[in-house]
Image 1 (cartoon, rainbow, N blue to C red):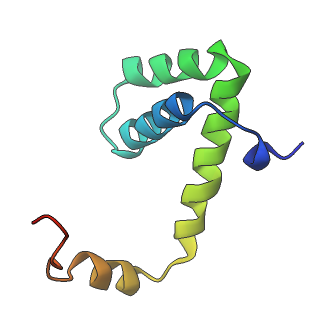
Image 2 (image 1 turned 90 degrees about the vertical axis):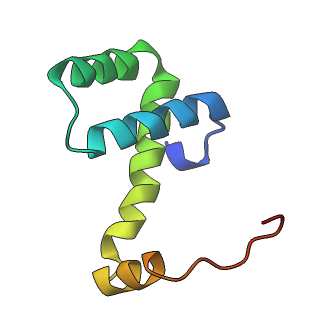
Length: 82
């Protein structure tokens, strides 16, 4: 089954994204890693959301680092309302 096409509750996807940020920070404690594992195993939707987050973030792995650096170092563009 393709997890990327399943409808997943946006709140669960947000939780997965938050866990991705925590674990990807390089500063996650062993307690946080255990909390993530507990969250992951608590419901099948959690695993599906985690899989989706990993799938989409892996798309960025192939971007050249100079492109990311150039994008991040752009001067702020005027945004509506600012």
